[in-house]
Image 1 (cartoon, rainbow, N blue to C red):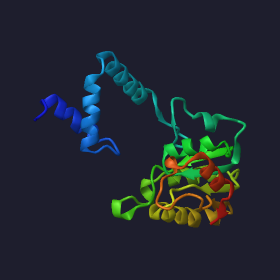
Image 2 (image 1 turned 90 degrees about the vertical axis):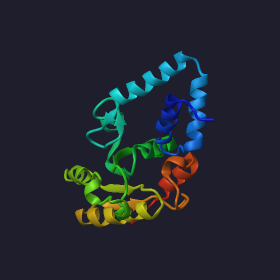
Image 3 (image 1 turned 180 degrees about the horizontal axis):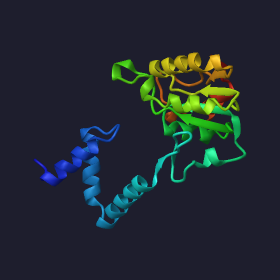
Length: 198
């Protein structure tokens, strides 16, 4: 049986979301259609409000409704310590550990020549600008434990070490090939505590 065009369009739109294949998109579309209109309006309003209110912190690159973000604006944070991550969701993962009290820098991805992502596509200039003040004593590279993350970590180490800033990496308690956002708090906390110099 073919679905009406509006349902087919909804399935196609949902399947463009990350991690959503055609079958999951179909299940989601049919579920949404079974819900009261008021729930769909509430969902649509929440998505639009997030899109309208949320931007990237001009300092660290984290998602925020206020600029600078709450972490960058917090005077209790250790300004001599910057944890460099690939994506905003990695900041959330590390914050859940309650083990880290420094600042962050979101690169916006990882080096991946096969995908056309080079150093110029990451927020490296912004990071170097933050390091120029001389206040930072250590960079914790918390990239994903995969080929792209490791290449990014090594590139950062070569870039930052000549500045006289200590460069460490999370300990390898994390599964290789995984993403930080899916690591549990205990494993990520132990990896953060047991980081080593690059």
